Structures are given as structure tokens and as C-alpha cells.
Image (cartoon, rainbow, N blue to C red; front, side, top):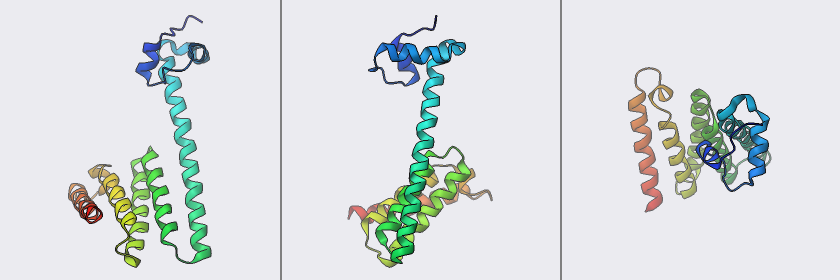
Length: 168
């Protein structure tokens, strides 16, 4: 293989440069048709595989927490953990609409816990992070009716209030 295997290319592609050189040569040979983009291709492919695996694990975790709720009836801990799993999936989502749906579902879980126990700090903190993530999706994801920027501002203000409660 005539593929370039210098470590500066791996570093540019974001691959771990501490791996042995033979690993880099093997990775480069897997897609020689990509030439200098070979490293970046392998990095992106690995990233997508890891993202998919993580999303699958978070989905399974959410299903487990849902089952806990079915058995126990009510569990603040299960709801908070289910919401955390949804936030994790939203952060991994490639589609803004899917992320929007997941963030909103997570916020609903956290707020349900806060209705029962308004002083639960972990629920406030996690809800604030979910609101920040939802606002970070941009105006198009926050609302298609032209009110997206306003909704983002409201989300961030609510998140700030929750975080102020957590800090106090």
C-alpha cells in the first residue's frame, strides 16, 4: 500500500496518535482508494459506529427505567434516569427533529419529578441541562412558527432559574 501513514495525518483526523504504527497502516490499507482521506474516513466510520452503539445502549437503559416505573408505579429516581438517557440520545442524534423530540420528552420527565418533589436538586439540574440542549438546537428546532428565538430565550431563562436554585 502506498498510503501515507504519518501520524500528523492521524492527528488531523482526530484519531488517537498513541496507537502503534502498525494499526495506522492496517487502517489505511482498508480503504486505499480514499488516499489521504483514508484516515478521516476511518475516523468518521468509527465515530458513527460508536454513536450508534451508544444510542442503542441509552435506548435500552430508557426501556429498563420505563419497566421500573411500570412495576413500582412511581420512582423519582427511575424518571430522572430515564430523562438522562433521553438527553444522552438527543445529544447523539444526527437529526434536529429527533433531538427536539427527545429533549422535550426528557424535560417532561424531569418536570414530572419536580411536580412531586419540587426541591429535588438532581431533577432541576438535569432539566436545566436538557433545556440548554434544546435551546442549542437553534430557532428552527425550537419552533417553526417564527417564535423559535423567543422560545430559545424562555428555555434559557428557565434553565438559569433551575441552576440558580441548584446553586443556592
